[in-house]
Image (cartoon, rainbow, N blue to C red; front, side, top):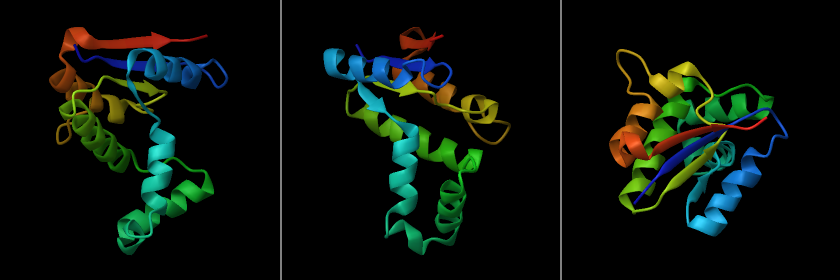
Amino acid sequence: MKRAVVIYGPPGAGKGTQANLLAWTKGFIHFDTGKYLEQFVHDPENQKDPAIAAEAKLFDSGALLTPAFVLKLTADKSKEISKSGYSIVFSGSPRTLFEAFGDNKNKGLIETLEKEYEKENLHFLFLE
């Protein structure tokens, strides 16, 4: 059975470590949102798109990327991972209420995960 796990906590709490343990021991895909976004916005092919180039500038300045941009990318990649039959674990994502729950025009990541993995297979953990 596929599962989705979201791990939250302050910096240094071990989110990435626990996500990696799930990946190594249980076959989850550790979706490191920050790493994925960095690779995406710095991909030379994507730099041709002015909107993505603008997001790359935000990334390089240390600012949060546009929540709608992040939501679209994470939701699309989550669907792809689910359709491949894998469980997924996030370490610190979604970052904003908008990314988590969306708005009148956008489904949030939580709704996407509920659809892809079923509500009873969606788990949230907070590390101190």
